[in-house]
Length: 291
Image 1 (cartoon, one colour):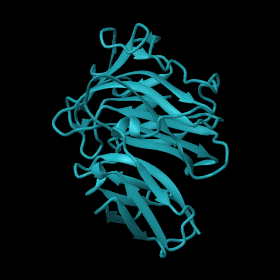
Image 2: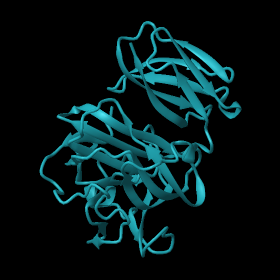
Image 3: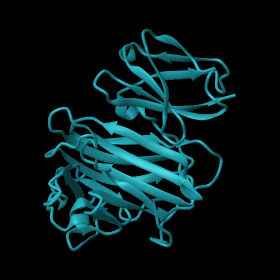
Image 4: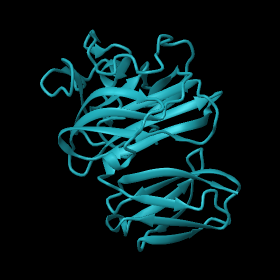
């Protein structure tokens, strides 16, 4: 089975990264058809022309990036979502996999902000995937992973970084996708602009994507029972609990505005939760501690 988008830690790349912003976060500077400091599926396989500089759908400045899902050429002939990756990337034909290299990033941002416009194919959804590491690829201490729904005009969103540790990161893996990974859908189109991290500032939270989601999870830390309070629009969704390594530990349907989950079987530690709607879209994410 094909493994999509392998993540690798590489050191000493982009040493000029600023604590306040990402290099070329507005996609203003392009070299050879690709945004400086970023990689795309176009640059990774040197065959697709579906990721491109755009000047007609910008959110700010003169350019944005347009991402469109396509197909890896023969012999693979496999669909993939268009992507913009911060750092270097390459396609390994022997593994039928994109290798997305991490970059040094010794900072601890509070949130990530960006503007996007999205026209999906069918029920496809775009995605932003960000991991902050400390020490090794397996030691994820901060993350953002959320699906992005359709929007006919630019939407500016601010997503909080969920931290599982008080440590300072040393590297970053950040990728925006024009479609889902399992399975990818060709043709979904995403415009992306104004990408930056925010430090020690107020954030609108994930509800800027979810459309006013209101979620309270308590007590935190929890011992035996976890209470999940949601607004009426989220009733019927599912809450899924994951370990910090991404393994799903348990799930439960949210049948009313106040729900109880038995977490007594969980080991002590930090856990990530996601609330998934009936269309299998992530509409809220957060973390809690088990003691």
